[in-house]
Image: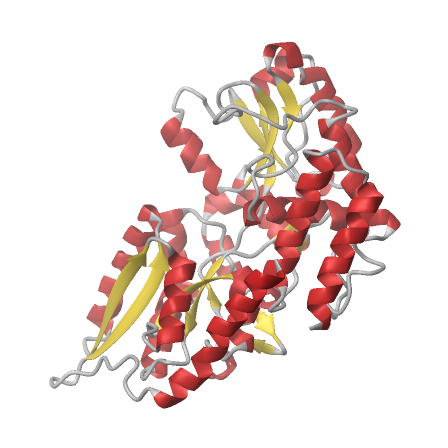
Length: 428
């Protein structure tokens, strides 16, 4: 894990040198006075279509600016290579967990002066602003936010006589209530399990960590301190250990969670409770049209413990420090992520908004099921640690989860090693 961080740091540390010594890293000017902006993002066909719509309207309003969007298949590798080689785009898509690394190494520009001049920041959710702020400066503009909730198979609940969960965020079930429902649903001999407590199951990745960190927060624990200087007293606190041991027990003593599961277990009727975000609604409707919302499945608020906490943070837009046209780049970013652009983005993608004005503008955001995600984002959201070391913190936490779940390791012992690994990175 340390080697990975070193490699990333070396790549990003070269960005400032190259940016200062490359006179035409993004020379998009032309003889007719039209500025050409390059914009890179990851693959996502539905979002790509929405962006092309916004690019078209932007260019109509700003005929002197042309935006060239490029889709990168291996996005993170492509953008780091471009930054290192001095060929970065003017505008880059950026995932929340990587923001601090790019900001620390000077790869992206702070946006505070633009927001102060043009406004719009006050309309953003506080938790979203927090997730995009590093060392008191905001480095990216949010396309949308993200949250997760309890997706449940209504048929399995009804067939097993399980009471249906509430729909209001403030009435979320406790861990124990979800566990009791999962026990009644589980029929391991026939491959039916009650609860998959992490997004994507036991497959490693940021999606898994995104859905697992809330257990620590809900129990009153955390992975590191507020200043992100140590994991000691936080990841190894009684609260965090209790949360991790609870998750471990779901796979072992309780036997309600599958370590191995078939593809799409939730819509295929072999999983009672799943955790995922609003993007899953369209996937289920499109890929499983016979699995009907409201009849076969439904959504409830994310569970809670002593506290109610949900995760947040998604993809954003940033200006690279190599851009020769940062002002024009901001015009486009503000067009897409500003108050009016955010409404178009929601209409086209149905991603959870990052703006209050968008939440208030659409009736479906104020009714079930989207109201659950909106209320959670407003009242209970907590960002992941904003630090250049987050990549290693996330990988270490993922390894910890794998150790206690797949290997059924002693939680206390496994946590000791994870705390040491995180502290070593934070001390560098």
